[in-house]
Image 1 (cartoon, one colour):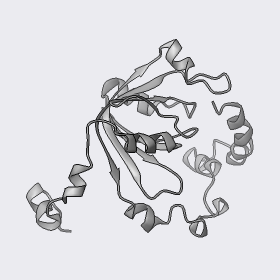
Image 2 (image 1 turned 90 degrees about the vertical axis):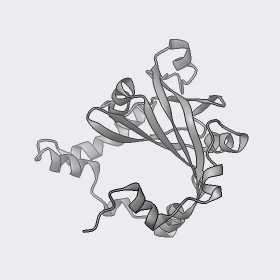
Image 3 (image 1 turned 180 degrees about the vertical axis):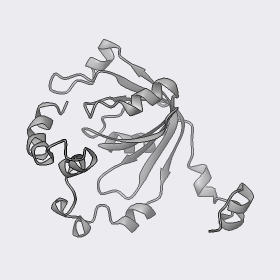
Length: 203
């Protein structure tokens, strides 16, 4: 296998980015970028820590990532599996990357920056849904923000309903837990109980 091991080797194959690829990157939000964040109900959050990298899905009501000002974003940490991998990383290494998606749109928005966690009671309360406040809020100082063109979404057919996979054709979370635990966890029971448990702990 031939590997690319230097930037010079890489540039010999790919050349230099075009003007539109560079001019779109800013260190602050503009109204057009802000509008995309406000419409997004889903973002992938990437973090780094001593144990390595992590990428976590974050989803909520559209606009759940709050624009505090043109250089600052705030995101509530909603309930999940309680591993807190992203939060542990942020405490030790604040670098983060975010990829915002909007259902139906091929364009995505990328944000890179530095994050810290706030457990301020008033701030957390401001993100409450149905009376449930997050335990902390991720506060992100923007270093760079830019849109990504639609090629990946178009190639994948992500929003094309005719290409959606029937979930029943995939292993269930319970089946995966049964496999990873050598059957010490009852996968069928997990799958049966999860909808009710999730409904009670969504926020």
